[in-house]
Image (tube, rainbow, N blue to C red; front, side):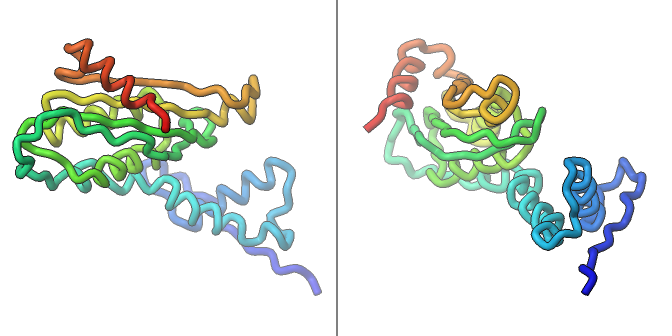
Length: 206
């Protein structure tokens, strides 16, 4: 019996409109053919649909904004004024140049000014920016700017440590190398002692 080949519509020329799911699946089928594969073979028949579904999750950060998770804060802090640090937040992102994974950890701190965030909100903020096409430098700056804008703390510090698969899997193929980026706002930028304290706390390992 002849194999059933799933037909994909040709993508429409509508650069100002978000493509449909069918058009996205057709694009995956085109890429499969371009690399020399046969999208009609059994193992690949559902691959375009699976890839599009996976992209919905991997790049779901475009459907969320920082205010969606940072909108609620707490004022009852019992006079707490010291640094709040959430470290070792796992994140996965994708390089905007090659669309291959960036895998790393984020360390985020702020100095409260009357209000604090729920700790899970910081991890969710990292996730929002991670689930977009990124450069590590941009992602670091975006996290810091979002916390400063929404919370108005006395200071903010962000450190990202990540391995870039665009270096490990292609090009120079340098495995295990880590890129570190930082962003400092307010008191954590102006006060060198506070900055060094953050770096020491963020880098500490059990």
